[in-house]
Length: 139
Image 1 (cartoon, rainbow, N blue to C red):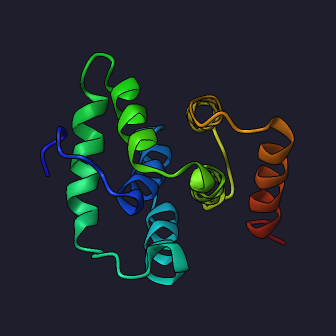
Image 2 (image 1 turned 90 degrees about the horizontal axis):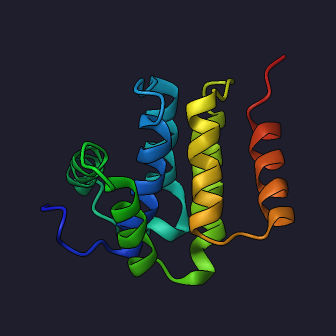
Image 3 (image 1 turned 180 degrees about the vertical axis):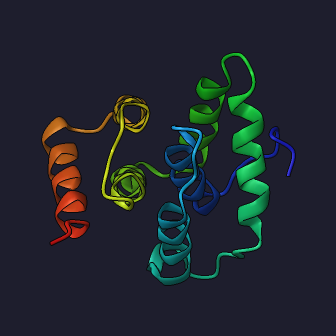
């Protein structure tokens, strides 16, 4: 998929998850499993062709290598994603960030950027973050 091709709403949700996982340049197995589980099990991904994940991933990586690529990626995401799914995108991003039990500075910066770009209410974002953290706690 060329990076100029429009994303679908489902592609956009996948792209947000990939962005968070790639933010620290180390896509961990737990993060990839979280992405796969979301795509395979969540109603918002019903009918999504999971084979597109490779193409969406490459588009994200290609954009991140370009100057202003992150800005371009968010433009594509906002264009494809209905407003009522902005919080869903953030929730998916938080789940990926929390999947390995530790959220480093690069992931935190990307989450902050997602909150800003998707114009999320700070209280809603905090609740989403806390929920993701609670679901990924260990003994």
